[in-house]
Image (cartoon, rainbow, N blue to C red; front, side):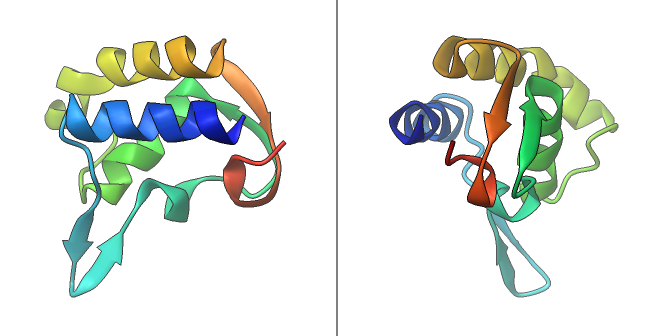
Length: 91
């Protein structure tokens, strides 16, 4: 599962440009916004990714890229939701 998640992160960073950001001097990464345990959906992943960019997940910028992020999640993670473990990616 970790390899699939790493591949997803590589795709959204390299292909889509979502590599995290620095807001108020603090580096942000998608991992900071993922649940530690439970179910993670493609929608929740997209929200976390946009928050890591310093974007409003409901804003117009996010709406432009949301479907591409969801599609990448499904392609790499094998479905629209996954069961997560610690830090949102360990099963």
